[in-house]
Image 1 (cartoon, rainbow, N blue to C red):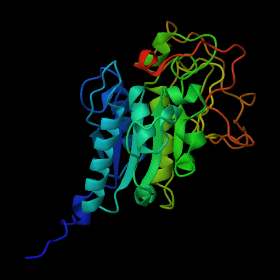
Image 2: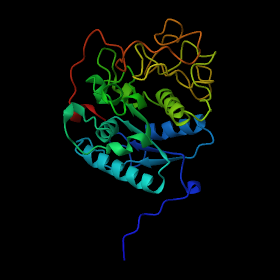
Image 3: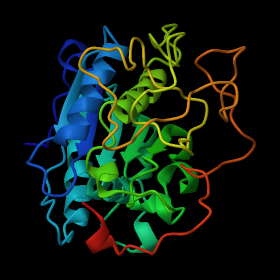
Image 4: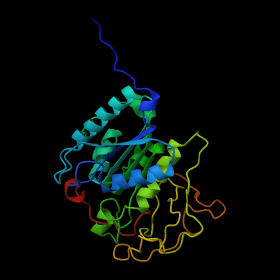
Length: 301
């Protein structure tokens, strides 16, 4: 009796997309706070699409010895999903230590250290978007968005300019890493992912870019903010100091400069879509004074 191929699910049983997300250090099993917020925003920005989730199964401990295990688990899950649902679009994401896991999956291990296997290149076309938050690779100019020939155009690397893990310079606070990504940066990433998922469909991303009420005190934006994938504004419809449930986070970020014509990447003639600067650039503008280096084990959360 010969071997049979694994069954392929019908289109009705398969999701349009699946977000595979690696949580940060010491977060409980699952997607983690940043991953959950990302998917919540993505589902709002890509209505009508069925989006499944998978939290990478790995030991996200402070010792950070299991990134390779996380990459292996993510790759195994992706292969399994695509064997049953070959048309499902894969989105990869990770926060903090989880960002390092996704770097391994994308074949971009930090420092060139071979911590684990990468996703075979034959699956690259199935991956439509990659997003990392608080990635230590940003400090060392090794982010997927700037370094990967295979995935760079599909990746966005988001760094809060007060996060000492990814931002090199003055003004860093630990709260910038632990509290600085939800909801502003997760919404920003969701808009980027939605644009990739909806590409070629004739649909647009609702609320994409800063609306007319985008004021000077939106919490969470620090000076020098610029994602690696230029030109993507956050989906901030109705979001501002008067929005119920979102008071200014002055304890963490303080008053921030407005988003206007003087902001790099912003074009008043094309609201919501910034003009990308010439050539690739880092996630944040170069600081005047470098900060001391952080080791991978001691720095990541």
